[in-house]
Every structure is written in structure tokens, then in C-alpha cells.
Image (cartoon, rainbow, N blue to C red; front, side, top):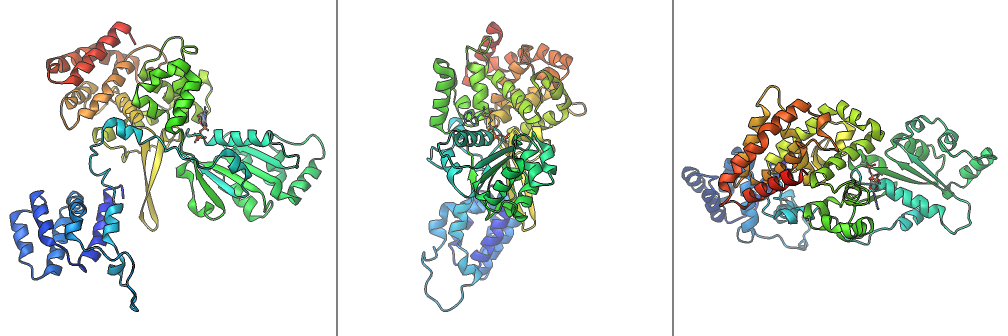
Length: 533
Ligand SMILES: Nc1ncnc2c1ncn2[C@@H]1O[C@H](COP(=O)(O)OP(=O)(O)OP(=O)(O)O)[C@@H](O)[C@H]1O
């Protein structure tokens, strides 16, 4: 229950329960009054109701009419005071010849404990703690060798860049280096590279048409494959419903093992359930991040380890790769700034997901300006509301989606809505900063947008917007690797630069004594100007 709209659903369920159970209404009423959900008059009216049943109904009516925020407060009150307000149903069902009624089966304690107050309520967790939540736990789950050895079909699911392809390549390597002398077959299909295999009309076309036709005895090999399909493993890297259906349903290779990789939004549970074991690829754990950084950066790993933002970003192996490339003093001509890492991450993701050659990447970015900026806008709106849910995302371009993970919410038996979140909150902040530098044609001009954000940084409620400022500073810098000049006209960026830094100092300098963040900003700016980085 992470969505606020679920509050309504829970209230309906609660109603069923509450009207059939006695509860301490005075505690709930008192709290609703104290928290401003109900006024004096409303409380009196509720108290005037005949009995507990009518009072409960009236409370629920009054609160639900006030909207979801009020429902949320009620849930929270029940959650906090449940020991005092609710009788707990017995853990073991009492023996009874009667069939249980719906209201008896429904356990509100359980429902309330399932309800996550995290998204609707601003979490008080510190930023480092929140960011650490991205890192998956260290669990000795299933190894590539075990995945290779099992007879079951496998569905490898994971966020973009999390390591699904790498895992299948590792399985291929293990297979190629195995000691067993038995004849078996393993086929790997990159479903994005070889789109024409989707149209393969026969098994022969599928297995030999792309790259691995035997030099001789093709028919013999094919017959052996057909006769001993239990010796065949086929990896489809990327979703391939059509082919799987063909192979499995037509029983061409009834005993072959199929391994499919897909991102969470492509996972069609109906197609895969039963036939496939689902394995989630979760990325690097804390220990793996350390091992990876030590192996790739050696001494230079300290630069990453000193920042919780960068360490937690590394849970996505694709981002860790960029970190290794950017921070390595061997490869880079000069040390990268943090924003440069984000620029490189964005450029690399776009390149990998569009299969664009390095030389053509700038041109590609230009063609995707609209999509990238629409993602940046959604990032800004979400950041301003201190949420990770991008509810206003209109773009479904595959390159844009490669920065996101989907959250599927079933709102009705036949309706599922999808919202998205960035793989890491700081990437959302990076995109939000990018959006701020874009001049809006119709509405406010960007100076106003940026000035608003400067002012927000000085308020308690919106001080989290401060994290956008360092990104903006660097994005205004003309140094390569460039991202901005392909997205926003040069002249616009220059115009912003001309007033941005002065305005920044004028806004934060007067607050220097009272606000440590203002000091940080000024320090940052000085370093920025002195080192030109
Ligand atoms: N276990 C790993 N060790 C080291 N590097 C890894 C590992 N897994 C992934 N990577 C790095 O991350 C990059 C992205 O990984 P990969 O292509 O496997 O992700 P993916 O989940 O298949 O992404 P997509 O959904 O976009 O296809 C790889 O190019 C590789 O450099």
C-alpha cells in the first residue's frame, strides 16, 4: 500500500471491520479532534449518535468525505493507538461449526501493519539512510553455476543496467569452460540486436539462421537437438513472448531449458507463471561494491567511498562502471567532478540503450531532446514534492525508461497503473537540475524558476532542493563531456550563466552565519571558480 489512492481502498475494508467490532471511540475521536480532522461541532454530532455502531459509521463518513489526507490521519491514529482502540482477534481460529463471516475473517491489525506510511508521509529518515536502502542485502542466493545446472526454465528479471545480460554471459562462459564431455547445446540470442529472429519461421531458421550454423552435418545436428531436447539451453536476452510460445506450445523442444531476461515492466506474469522460476537480479551489495571499486580503482576508490551518494549509486553495475571509468586516474585525462559522473552515466545509458556509436551520440541526444527534457520535468516536479514517484511522466520512450524502474499498481481486477521511479534518487536530482536550466517558452522564464528554487533552499520544508544547485553549477560549465549543449541552445545557457552565480552569492551570502548550507554553497562556488571544475 504505497500509494495514497490505496488509502481509500483500505478505508472501505476498515469500514467492513469497524462496524462489526467494538473499539474505543473516545480515543480515536480525541485524536481526530486534536489533529484538526474534526471540529468541535462534528465531534459533538458523533457523540450524539445512538450507539457505537452508528458512531463508528459517522466517524468513517465524516473522515472519508474530507478526502484522502484525512483518511490517512485516521489510519495513522488507529495504527498508533491500536493496542488501546482495537481488540485483537485470536491468533488461532476458534473451532466453530459456523462459516466465518467476511467481517470476522478480515483482520484490521494485519491490514494496518501492511500499510506503508512511507510514501504518503514525508519520511524523517536521514539522507544517507534513505540512500543506503538502495543497496540490496548481502544474501547468498543462487549462483550462476546453480542457474546453469538447474533443469527449470528461468526468468531473470531486473531493472535496467542491473546485470541481467552480464549474468547470462557468465553462464555462457561457465558452460563453455565446463569439464563435462557430454554433448549439449547452448544458444544465446540478444533480442535487441537480432530483431529478425523474432520472425524466424522454423526451428532451423531460429537456431542456425543468425550466427551459429555448423560447418557440416547441419541436418544431423538438428535431428540430434530435436531428439535430445533435454540437452538444449536457449537464452533469450530480452523479452520474446512470441518465440517462447512457439517453442513451448508447439513442443518443438519440449525438454529444452529456456532462460529469458526482462525488465520488470515487460514481465507478463500470466505467460511465465508455472513454467518459469523467477529470479530477480538485484545489483551489487555493499560488499560487492567495495570489491568492485577496489579491483577497478585501487587507491582511487577512496574518492568514491567518501560519498554516500556515489557508493549507493554503485548498486547499479552500469553506474558503477561509469564511476570506475570516471575516477580512474589512468583512463581519464583529468579527475572528474561528481556532476561529470552523472553526465557520463546519462550519456552512457543513452548510448547503450539506443545502440548508438560513440561518434553519433551527440546527434542522437539532439534527436531525443524532447523526451529527455520531459523526463527532466517529471524529475523536477517529483523532487519539489519530495517524492520518488514520477506520476506526471508522459513519455514512454525506451531510452528514457532506461533510467527508471516501474511500479505496477493494480487498481481494479482489470486495470493496472504504472508509475516510475529513478534507479537512484540523485539521478532524479540531476535531471531536475537539468530541467531548471531549460527556458520555458510559455510560462515562467527560467530565471524565475531558478530564483524560486534558491529561495526554497532557505525554507525548512523545501531545503532538500539544495542538492540541485551543485548540479546546476556544473551543467552551466562549458567543459566537456557536454550534455547540455545538445539539449539546450548555447545562448540560453550563456544567458543563464551571466546572472546565475551572482544571484547565487547574493541569495546565500546574507544567510552565511545562520545557515551551514549557505556556507557550503559559497565554499562550493569558490572551489568551482578557483579550480574551474
Ligand atoms: N556482475 C557484474 N560485474 C561487473 N560489471 C557488471 C556486472 N553486471 C553488470 N555489470 C556492468 O554493468 C553494465 C550493464 O549490465 P547489463 O547489460 O548486464 O545490464 P542489464 O540488466 O542487462 O541491462 P538492460 O536491462 O539495460 O539490458 C555491463 O556493461 C557491465 O559493465
